[in-house]
Every structure is written in structure tokens, then in C-alpha cells.
Length: 381
Image 1 (cartoon, rainbow, N blue to C red):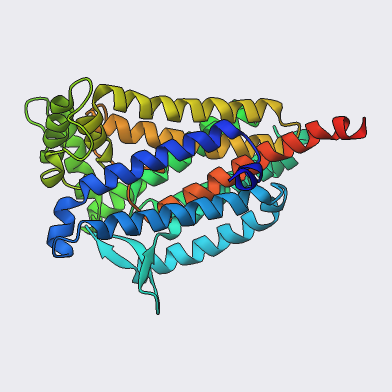
Image 2 (cartoon, one colour; image 1 turned 90 degrees about the horizontal axis):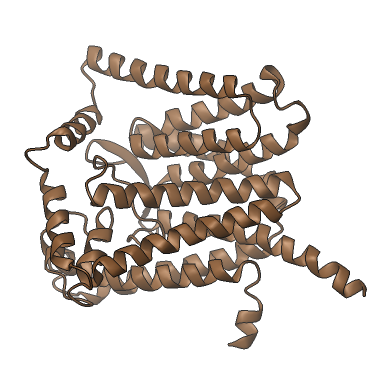
């Protein structure tokens, strides 16, 4: 055990946070998949727990190996993988597995597993933007040599994600804006970026409406309408509120959720409601505190890292993860319309868990490099 722990370098607090989130994840997934197990697996309630534990273990292994790789190497593969994700997303849009009028998944042959290429795109775009910002700090205010190459990649990536997943595209676009602001991009250029994004969205809605090919637009409109309707909640929101209210302060106890059989997507989009139902306000606040602490530790990594790329990489990936978590929790407590964004490192999922784990591993790689450089003077003495 000591040998294993000694190899977990980087920020130890982040490792502890990931461990506790994984524990909550396993417990919550086991509770929330009971109904799904009876519908799809003949009552085998252990199936989804075992599958999820395997994914968690794979995620930990990928996180471990990702954090052992010097973070500078990611700048070399980030752009290549971004272009690969564009090809995969274009192929998915044409020939992907469709669910709820959205083509987001590709099915891998032989193993018959599905994955979302957008998860690759979200991680690699942040790597690419961090690299571009770091390499162009001397002329970062210049429109043609600095801003234009960055915004082209941001807009193209978000445009490919947007038709099937408005929430993920908006989250990624916002993260890139924050990263560009931190990277000292001109405020004027950032306003250009916001204008371009708004123009693209309005154009998409207009063309889709005129051609009659609305796709996911009807779903988005219904979600916003349900959220704005203060007199009547949507079915999902109503069931989530029941779960939260019945949880009280300390909750019903582990595995005693009743709403898991009623609440749609209780193991993914609304898993936070199941956590509050079983562990109460205390459990809900603990989850929130873990994400906030994670962001704080990543900001500390940003502050201590003397390399622009490493600092921007850590803060960009962490903002994306924590912002997604806050949005998921806000949706659950009815502060935002239903989005479909899962709770990172907690919700049941395959590619989401895998690429989130790799992202955390990259952050830890930056932290590990800081530790190694701090040890050099001591070794010299």
C-alpha cells in the first residue's frame, strides 16, 4: 500500500477528493440503478454496480498514467487529437447512434461499446487553447496572429458539438472564454467571440426553423418553457424536488432511496437528487464542497506553476469540470433548465468518466512537475 501511495505524486488533496467522489459515485449508482436493473437485466442489481466499478478503476489507472506523463507532452498531441475528434464528430453527425433526436454516440466494432467523440473534443480543445495562449503571450493582443487561430478552432469545435448537445457546446464555449480572459486576450476580442457565438446560434435556429428540420430545437424550447413555467414543474424536476425534500438534513440512509424508481435518469443527469435523498443536505453540501475544494487546489496549481502552458492547462480543465458540476447541481435544485449534463466523476457513464479522469490526470501532471522542481534545490544540497 505504501508503495502505491508513494507513486501517487502531485496534489495529494486532489487525489483524496477524487477518492471520496468515487465512493459517493459507486454508492449512488448502486442505489439509482435498481429500477433499470429490473427493466434491462432481469433484476440483476449488481450488474450496473460492477460495470461502474470497472469504469472507475479504468479511470483511476488512466488518471495515474496521465499524471506520470510530463504535461508538456500534451501540447504535442492535443492539436492532433482535436482534428481527429472533428472527423469523428462529423461522422457521428452523419452515421452515429441516435437517441432523443441526437446523434452523439459512435459504436465501436467487435466490442460493441459506444462512446461520445465530443468528450475527446472538449478535453483536446482546452489543451489546444492553453497551448496557443501560452505560445503567443508576447503578441497576445494581436488579432490576426493570436486571436484568429484560437477563435477559429473554438467556433468549429463548438459548432460540431452544438446540433446534438447545446449544453456541452455552451459549457465548452464559456470555458474557452474564461481561459482566454485569464490568458490576457483583448477584452474587445472576447466580445467579438461572444458576438460570433450568438450569431451562430441565431443563424442555426433560423435556418432550422425555416427548413423545418428542427432536430433538438423542440427539446430545448420545451425545457426552457418548463423552467419558465412557475406554476407547473416538468416531471423530472418535480420528482427531483420530491427526492430532495424527502432527504431532509441527514437523509434516509444509504440505499434507501424511493425516488430512484420514479426519477428519470436518476443514475446520470439527476444523481445529485438521489445523493441528497439518501444523505440529506449534509451529503449534498459535502459534494458541493469537494468540487469547490478541487477548484481551489487547481487555482493554487495555476498560481504556483511558472510555465504558462501548465498553468492555463490546469485552470482550464478544472473550470470545465467544476462548472459542469455546478450546472448539474443547479439543474437538480431547479435553478437552471434541464441540460443533460452529468455530474463529473459521480454519474454513471463511460466516455464521460474516462475523459474526465484523464483531464484530472493532466492537472495532476502539472502539479507533479511543480513538486519535482521544488525538490531540485533540496537534492542539490
